[in-house]
Length: 402
Ligand code: ASP
Ligand code: MG
Image (cartoon, rainbow, N blue to C red; front, side, top):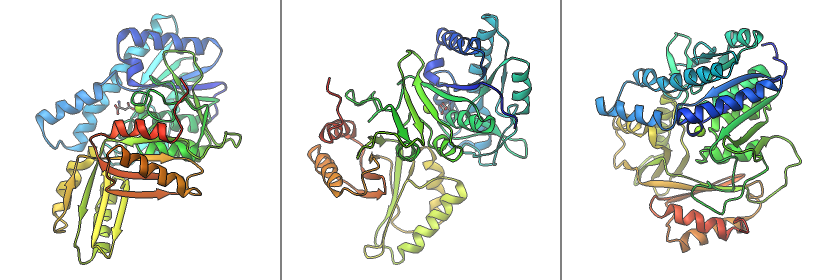
């Protein structure tokens, strides 16, 4: 793909586009960028909570809707915002054109509701940029090689944005959110969370995978592989945000931040004769369904298998598990994970000790604990998690002074 000179790619999330007024504000922001002489591609999410509402609508009609039809339905959300934004930009006297994921050449595999991008053939986007137009792209959606419309999983418009930035070798990739950056914890839940100036790809990937909603984890994976600096900033103010980058000069910290994931569910069996085989079978099913396992614990001695997965895919997994014939399979949709992420974690058992002590003071009982080189994750019951992460943030010395 030819590199478009001075190309800036901006992504606006659902809350930035929630009302016609906000869409007009976004239009002004986009036009400001265009006036600087940049070529501009804008990636949009659906307005406000449109995707949630469409999802609920589907559930009223069918408890377990065909995934192809779900994709047809959910992609409608981004078509509304992309066309309205294009109209708002035209109103300001600038030429704009909106494209669906398919028209933009976002080619994915065939896994409906959680497709992966396999190629970007953005020729039409390039042609329109060459004509001087602002191009609006519907995020979160693509087209499979057999011409079916697909979606990339909830939060996937970040991934559309970073994939386009990588394909075009864009000069700048900007993600506008309502929170205005990456924080040491979700600032909506932990008021004393601090905004980070910069964060490494590895730490951001871990935070996103462990539930930090600010960026879709697959977008961080693409950013890391193609070395795209991702600027996360506020759509409502001019304050500097956070850059996700490979640069070495990031201030080193033992703990970069904490996050929770309330949208997980667990499946567990105990007393199995052959837990290794059971886990292989379960993981085989998950692989076939394209669903990630967030945490895996297998203990031969206890005959125990515990696997944590995203709750949104839980119904599908549960119905598949029946066919495995594993006895005593217990499912729990009232669980959550709390994760602490930082480069210094593996070298410091003290941190794990402090985390466990703090959670226990908050009255939480760990159901499982796992660590990677740069993270520690605790599985627990869902109630009291928000209070526990506030306490944990303070106990780990992350609270901002004010
Ligand atoms: N509208 C989609 C969602 O709510 C995609 C996105 O916002 O990134 O998940
Ligand atoms: Mg998002």
